[in-house]
Length: 97
Image 1 (tube, rainbow, N blue to C red):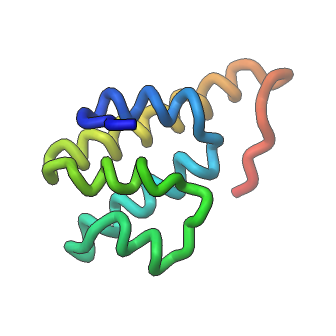
Image 2 (image 1 turned 90 degrees about the vertical axis):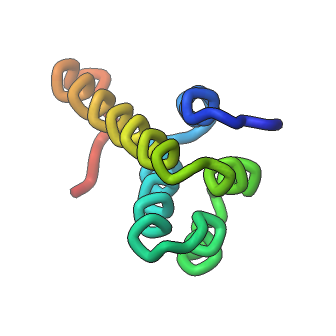
């Protein structure tokens, strides 16, 4: 699977990741940007083994601006889900804070 654009990666995440995986990938992306390392390095460092290696590799192939765009889209998706759950409490997934 060759996902080369942030939009393609987002589509894959929306179709295949649960909330924990999406949040974990976003954490790894932001840590890699902060620490100026690769997403793969952060995955190894933190042990987020539930995030598929091919997605991590695709993230690492993105330019920094595209990686920031990807992280923004992931965060937006997570926030949209939270807002939807707040509007429809009967369908809401329990969010532990």
